[in-house]
Length: 364
Image (cartoon, rainbow, N blue to C red):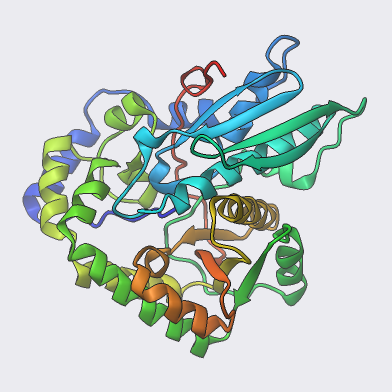
């Protein structure tokens, strides 16, 4: 769930190359994204495809899409695709299971819109998986959160700093309430600044780790052709950065991805935000991590329905030494802070891509 902006160098060579590359013929990223994020109609024989399509539009760490689906008309299973894990940023697979939880929440909402109720359970055996039991209800129930699935995005840009009305903050809190989880909304600047200090310190620690940088780089997509070919990863255009040939993007990244540059950007982004939101759960195990992902997804969809943008800032959760300090600042005792986002008002950015549904549906 950690989406990072790529700061590319401003040298004349890089800018010239970006300009030249921009006019080259190639695949249309907007067309590819529109195909992914369009509302699909449920066909008579594709009930599982319909549910999985909606599920895969959930947020997930580094846009790795670490999920595999299998199922029937009465039950769907979601299990981890560990080949898409990020062991440096996410050594205990917390973000991976939270990503599965976010997908499960989208699937539950899509099932309701398709006239089916859904009961979500977690099976810890065989590496852990989510099981969703489906029952025909005879009538469609289109939750407003379902309507937001195709509009939700992590918006990694500057926000307007405009405050979110208290009534809407209460709506976000209510929407994110899942058994065992809650969202804490922080809007007072002194507390935001204290958390920001943890974010920048943890960010510097991560960037100082060459293994972390190498892992992050492996998921970066510096141009539309690469992003469309893989259907995953972090496309530079989604952060408002220039499109470059892969070889040049790799060089520019190595030169420009520094703790100072990233922290300067984070400070400005948090300063432009209306507040921070922290998903907190009462346990620290995969079942609770799944619940945290469901809670986050509901927060994100509710925010989207209200015209509120958000983006992840999970650094102090990924660097273990900083997690207790964040918990202490929040006053949550032994509860685990699971996910951290900033929120506020901004224009939408380009959306990330997804792999085809056929690539993530497997035999049970």
